[in-house]
Image 1 (cartoon, protein in one colour):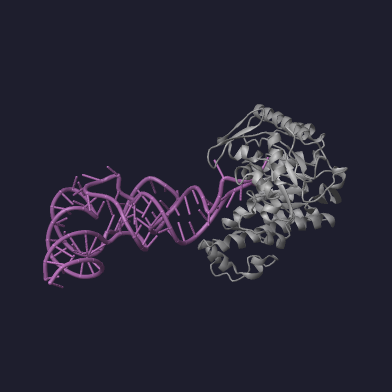
Image 2: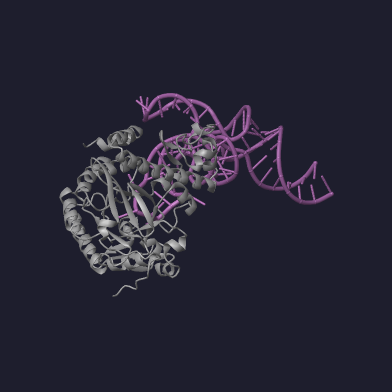
Length: 395
RNA sequence: GGAGGGGUUCCCGAGUGGCCAAAGGGAACAGACUGUAAAUCUGUCGUCGUAAGACUUCGGUGGUUCAAAUCCACCCCCCUCCA
């Protein structure tokens, strides 16, 4: 079935795409500082990408995102297809126009929903059949269909359909799943040949927690001409040391000249380690979800603003933070807003946490440029000692 | 003055002889959250103790009973209606 291609808002001619869309300017060990170009702007890497599942970074408006300097956000294929519908979005000029977001958009394929909504789906060779979590209706997501949806959304960076395998899956299942994920990636690539339009396409490596399968996944996918490569299936409930083991095993094997994306990860320490392993892109709901649940990240570590100790704390949330929240309000007030369930609490907390994650990536980039990444990583480890200890548990 | 209803652990509120330190909710105090079915979930929540357990508590006082938040008597408060 031919694609009803919609012209993008920019006439972005793709020629020699893999060379021009991504450049690496500096390296420090495995860590890289680069620049990724999409039809909607330039993305300095390493980068943290706020998650806006349904076309909105929860509690945050585009002007806030601009203020904190977020060049790219996520959207979700599954969720936007169900509501409001990708064709409805296409009729409005794509997700950028619909959501009034001028920056770049990366869309996840729905592969994570294969994991998170596992009770509502059935995996078959042709694709995944979902029962909508909204109304129970049935929908078949194929590798091709998922691309079409993402084209309708006019995503700058599209992801292939994959199966995100849960932690604990045995070798046989993981191997079988991996083979399917690879076949789906091949179908995606052939349905949407490299250079067809300005919408970039990234492949997703899987392989669960078996190193040889991780390697196999990389080998099977990385010979293909994708615009970038992701590591999927981490942070699905495994112990921290296992995750790091697989991260450090997999990331270096991905093509060195293409952007590397660690999906759904993670904590500041995870991101710092990801960068250390050579990853360029990260996304996670943690800063926004935790913001709504009262956990805030600061230059002194992680705090829960709900705690009684902040009841009369007139100081800023983080004296070293540049964000509006920290420049304007006291911890005592933020605690009060949270306790009172004021909607402003969501916005101020989300604004701050996102700033923290954006700045984390920004500072990491600078550290790479200045050749002091190891020290930067050590600083992050010192901020989150418990987590660092868990990460080192199996090492 | 008359008739009726009611006083339960921080608050609301269930409980009408033993299974009650007492349901449920709230508040409070902690913890969790990783490609968002999340403004969600979990734990603690009389005192002491790691625990077993012990002790104190259901407006007050006194009784009945092997056993009382629950039954009886009197008293003190609160609410509604009538005069």
